[in-house]
Image: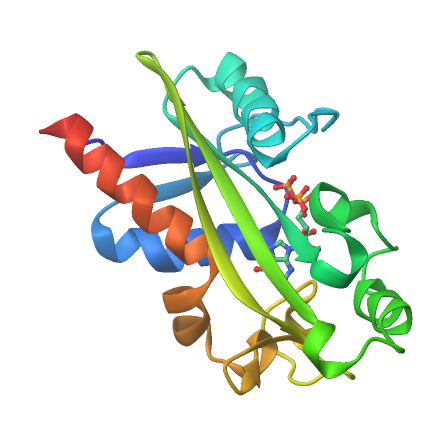
Length: 192
Ligand code: ITT
């Protein structure tokens, strides 16, 4: 099984979580910056898988070694799945929680369901595949906790927000954690 993968992302938090999950499994995650692939392609796909593939392909063209990319977002039931693939562009960085809380202010408890989705695209010289993971929870009424990033302070899983969990606990149940576990299983099968 291969031991080095380039992660096509400019998001330091995704990179950290992928390392926390994959390095104990013996896979070293190299950032696209470390690999010398400076790119930020337009994410104009219609879903998470298309966008993940766009990012993975752009870096694969440069590095020509195994690459992963992660496209993810928060899908809110009461907003018909928004912000979804537009999660990164929904509000200026650091204001996403405030904006979503205000959109959700009149939504009652039983209609606050939401899920995070993460799709990871993997490419090497044999071709590509995608794997996905989900994390189902609900939207809080205010921010709680300071760990994590993005929408973590307003996403409740069980009795805590993701920002109130340790990195280790978040990784066990998160959309990214689930998708990376599936990636690992596929790579193991491929290497057998
Ligand atoms: P790259 O495209 O460079 O990987 P990005 O941040 O632009 O980085 P996306 O286009 O996939 O990535 O946008 C995902 C957004 O969804 C991200 O910016 C967060 O706002 C949100 N998001 C994804 N995973 C999250 C998580 O685990 N916790 C909180 N917010 C998350």
